[in-house]
Length: 210
Image 1 (cartoon, rainbow, N blue to C red):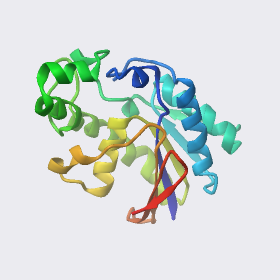
Image 2: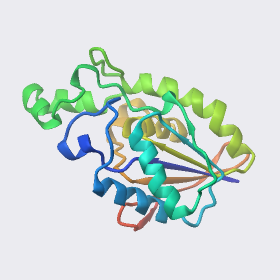
Image 3: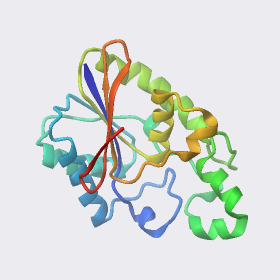
């Protein structure tokens, strides 16, 4: 049995300002580094054999904070653009709450959370799903089958898309899923690819079993 550990990066400069980040390559703020270190503490009971992350620096910085806590100095992460954040197109860099006032609550929630809501020059959540799931099947699942524990450090929408696949969440319900900065999802997966256990480890180090 292998553990699949999903971690959303710590709070970034754009997160702090309430801006849509997408593929903008921003760094963590101090609180984000603390969240990342806490994420490492939350999984100190799991020996990590492999790490996958996006190409964006906020995931790299999260890993460095986690690595210091977990003493994984010899472990080199695998980086791939398939794990990058959703491209928010024309909304990139805009303040979320100002956009909400402009377009209204209903349209705002569709932009943020819907499965296949188009964004000019950007991606839908379905688009993100269609790149992250093949990467998971090709590069991560084989490691889990070999009973290796895999850490994936990525972004809110990328992880939402992956969790949708793992838990077979219906498109009409995916809008209900929110993954906070620094939050950790731990799955136990057997050699047949079946999830036999799941635990969400919250940022304040409480553990919520579901």
